[in-house]
Image (tube, rainbow, N blue to C red):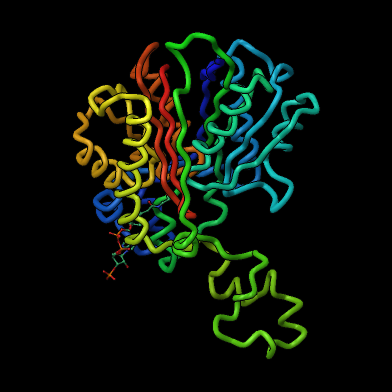
Length: 349
Ligand code: UT7
């Protein structure tokens, strides 16, 4: 039975550093509030016009491809996870395929927000295990800075997020001492609206309780995109932070234990846990609940903020570059976010 291994990994973050104090230009907040509630000190914002989610994904992908000792021409499938695509459609996968002058290979976009990269990795893993593809590029990238309400009205959401990208190349291996051992995917759509960006969308609840039959033609014509949406900040993400926090601290440990149990391991066997960088307080709670030592958990939200689908590959890449992940190590990736969706992957490096 074939296994998938991460043959190459890369990351890219924009040059522009935005500190907590820099945000004071736009909103009422404080470095103290942000650090105390989230652990974040700074984040990166992409260049407004020259960088997009795809261009950042391309930079991360180039490094991953080179480290996998392969070429863009040899990649036979793309899985691209993001919630901040360059266009409403088509997705970033085809834009990356074009930018890297790849062959006419399949390109799939994954819309699973914070757990997007782990979902994407799981999809790619299945294709490798069945022998269908031999060189899959998996990317997680976000340009949040373009779509945040940077006024005081949106501060509970906007201070958390940052931009960046991470990528891996998955290849088959017959070495049973290496590669992805298992992946675990979950969802609960009952809370879909508590962390969401509703517009633009095809739902018809823009006018709250107003009876649809009473809409006039002008209102119906502008349902997808209207001035009212702009005026009411409905084109920005909405988050009920405390509710997300409460669910996250239950589902993170659950899905990590699911991966360990499936493979006969215990928490003490984990070399490095890479949790989605949602909030340092969530990661610390999970660490404490599972009884993990500091050296078993890698966090870098302090410097990049929450980069959603990019956070797991960025943290994984940085941990590996710093020599914290070595051959044979047991690495657990875990994520939770909008949907709700949550996921884990257990792998031997
Ligand atoms: O990756 C996607 C998944 N997302 C998450 O996992 C996020 C989970 N949730 C969280 O991380 C936390 O809920 C937040 C960091 C978003 C917020 O922290 P909190 O401790 O839950 O704060 P809160 O929303 O309950 O707000 C507490 C107070 C409020 O003021 P009052 O009503 O108590 O006077 C807010 O208006 O803090 C205020 N506040 C702020 N103050 C300064 C909210 N945002 C800010 C801000 N600066 N940026």
